[in-house]
Image (cartoon, rainbow, N blue to C red):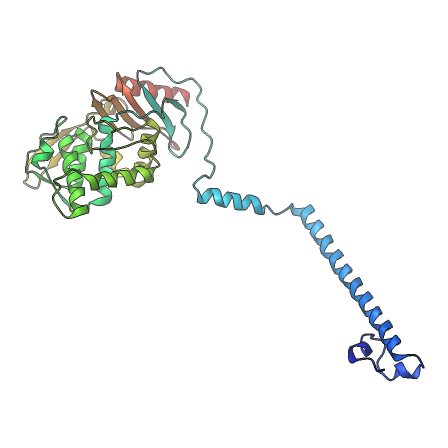
Length: 347
């Protein structure tokens, strides 16, 4: 019986297959022996390669440590989910003051946790600090050249009202300046009407649902989760509520996306000219601007239900801007003053 080809050439020492027969041995047995030697050498070669790989792996781990695949994936997932670890807050040197406010929050922009707070989670009536989200909705919906008309409905909203007349027209940014500096309800309503018209193509007659939808989208984008807006002015309505924590997030959203709004709120006095060339003098409702020139902006609010409300941006250092939100205050400016003095002492 003649062995097949691969049996002859499995042994490298056999160069001529005829040698199998000249030895006088059974060629089938000799072929099986040769195949056995081949399989043995093959196993020894595999063991040698495996041993070399393990040695290299051990040396690599000893020198550089195990690769952190799980950690990198976890970090990537955290970044994608917006849960990347925030920097730790500076520690205040003294305790925060007692305030008359029902709720407040003080937080550094760029940091997640507040450095001082009281019932910051509680939804309360926000009053005219609502106009911050109205301004953001106007900027994000209306083109700069949009003309804002002061309608009869706008002038019928109720105090606090500006001096502008029914039928006056203003460019978008001029209207925003009047609303923020004077906390004008009539101009806030006119801006909301313009947003509604831009969304529908029609003059608003049945409320402002599309404006409220825009305001809700901004609130969600800013991370506000416990607030609900039902009008553009901040006038008291059942269900028109917000938390200090949420308004802190809105303040930072505006600081990041629309910093020009905070620049407007720093103006103690200003002027506005209508398309009809009527000149109006503007005076800011924020009494703390003259007392603290370093303020980077703010917005006031006051209604019977909300009492006093206030948002302030105060730079404690070049790298730390404090966002102050005060809700339900018996004396909003005194509470704001106390918190600014505390920031100056504590950091």
